[in-house]
Length: 387
Image (cartoon, rainbow, N blue to C red; front, side, top):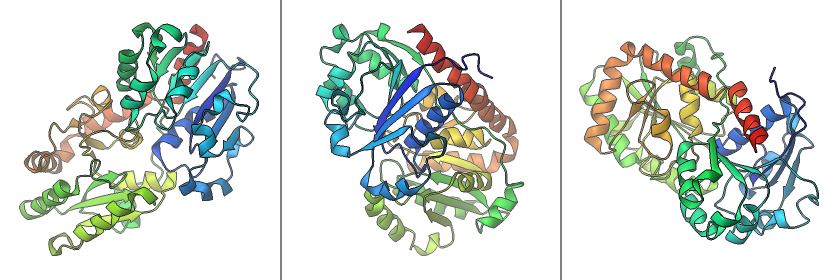
């Protein structure tokens, strides 16, 4: 049991879409932290807007978070809800504030927010982060007294460039479940997903938009692998039913109609339950992150989950990934996303996969040692005690 149990601390979590369904990286990471803090005696309040694309999720039970979540209109949140009475008439002090995203919050809101006499934890930061931070940080270095902890070294580095370095005192990792797989052998999972036992499965899980999945590079590489290797290689692509990704989904489906890709790509378009995600990981041999620029969340949830499931990961060095993946030790860094480089990496992993058990083991050890609930909660509560 955590030594901080029954400490009576109060934490406010502010973000967008922090409610079921728990299908996206951002909301999963903040849900994990909120539940862990509740279990360790922290009083939690979550204020969130309901993304119009996920309103159906509000019908789901919030479980242990029931009664701790206040949902406001997105416009109210973006207009500076912290400074208004719409934020459940906030008249008491919280010990820390957790920001789930900065991109939808205006500069005026952030300017007031960062002057709070409190500790601040910045968790999820999306593509527009650097521009938003640059605008909001004007003049704040001399004004803010909040101590800042961040969810990754990359986020922390950005804050240090905008604030006095002394304000950013800690990196606190997200909590990642490292429970053992529940589905038995890999071949059992492959059978459930209608894959052959002989297939070498390369998994991509995430949005299909071009900067994140460069299909014009990945798919030709897959064709070349098919021609040159005797072992069958399949690409398993899992993406959610997200409205803003539909154009890319249609384009991807057109590419899959090519005769030489028939049967080589399995596409799953659905919001996966956590048990279903574990099944997908279990069936996979390599998980890829071929991002051409920023990932959606830092650090990327899928990368961490893949490592927890002892999967080989191949990722480009964007955002905080180089701080997590040590090339050749617990995963592999893809230095370039051109087709020859990707083909060489894929071919090497396919032919050497059976010899990389130590890499898989170290990947899981990274998560168990650095992203466990006990470790993260202790780090978070130590940060609050220090500030």
